[in-house]
Figure 1 (cartoon, rainbow, N blue to C red):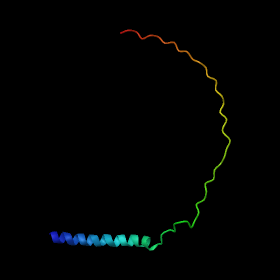
Figure 2 (figure 1 turned 135 degrees about the vertical axis):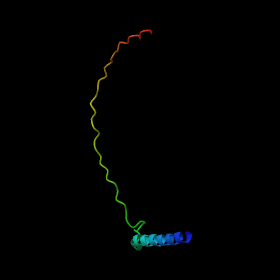
Figure 3 (figure 1 turned 90 degrees about the horizontal axis):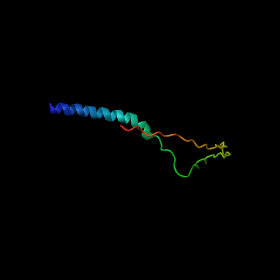
Length: 72
């Protein structure tokens, strides 16, 4: 019984290897992108805008009458 299980696993392993090879071979066959100082990165564009005008707000004092809590 154990030998039959191992044979089935070997078949399954072979199947997985074949599928992985089929999927990964095109990826491995391509050349990696060039790196280094070959291309200069574009500099960011900065926009300078005048500050937004904030309307002045006048402060008004507010008084609130407080009543003591009733004793229980």
